[in-house]
Length: 391
Ligand code: RFL
Ligand code: PHB
Image 1: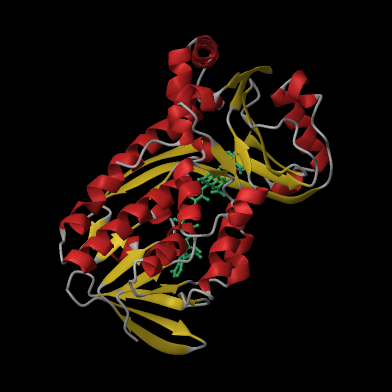
Image 2 (image 1 turned 120 degrees about the vertical axis):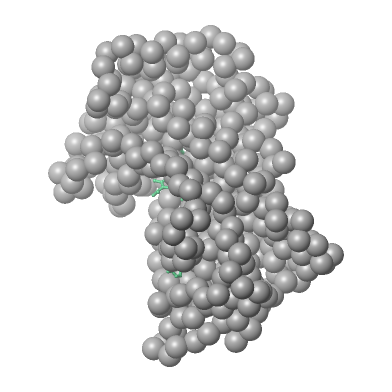
């Protein structure tokens, strides 16, 4: 088999890139280790920045999102249950975010793939990259027990943090930067109305809590937990009790309890690898960088990476110019590092750090009080939350 672009991974990065390349008339094949139901079923991101919303529209995939997605012009912060709202739309001159789950985005991307003739190989086992530092790279994989080979011009690693692409780069080439946080998020989904029409990020002495949603009838809640916490120890009752304590009386009085149908623990990490290219291999999305979910940036960064990459590849094939692909890593990383900073800062502001003392907690509470009273501080938060421009 031969194609122009081999894409490893059919998550948001891989599927948005496949649609962008198809729209530009560039040939691509996506190789995905799992099946469609598995990729679509993963409960993850909930908040889309304007650039992601715009890309859905530009690709002609925005109809259901426009119908079912929830536009949020503000978000709430809380310190020990004292709530205040940050009016992001007013502070940024009209920018908003869209609450529309990653699962819904994936469904829209997959539904449109077949009619548009996108080539996706699911259940591709033993994907391996070859000759990425030559002009004729290739990818081998196993499909239904048969060994196959895909020759291509470029390989794009969109296979997430645990994928094979980053690992195919020779030792010593990449520089990595990492911060592992000493806690995780315990999250649930429940078919109950959300406690607020917008999100609540709460700093409480007992730890962080987040009230989010998927729809007017489906809530998504998270509480900070220890890394060695066991799901089995968290009955729904225990979860609701702890959540309500941490959100404070005002929000808790509006929490509707009900049975959860999803419960999972995710660790929190900041991670960046540089550069995002080696020879004919380019990395995009979680394969190159991870943010803690506090800033709601992970999927949106995958989107900005592949927008930049598709522009670079379009320039390469259209104008026979390598300028775009040569500049991709630096351009993408400039935006990535700003989102890393925001996600780290917002995590540091809102979580309980087990190794820190009362002074640090006082600093958090003072900073939240400062944000509450300062338009300048709110503008800074708002412009980062809705998403920095693509430059
Ligand atoms: P993904 O989604 O991990 O997709 C990678 C794909 O590659 C496949 N793969 C392979 N395929 C072939 N061969 C191999 N050897 C392979 N190894 C892996 C995998 O099966 C998979 O299908 O990476 P991608 O595309 O870069 O997308 C990144 C996003 O999924 C991620 O950043 C977000 O989910 C992060 N995130 C959030 N992002 C937001 O923008 N807004 C949010 O509100 C938000 N909330 C969250 C989040 C992530 C969370 N968790 C669970 C980590 C909330 C949580 C709790
Ligand atoms: C979610 O709804 O899953 C969600 C929302 C905001 C975040 C992280 C996750 O910051």
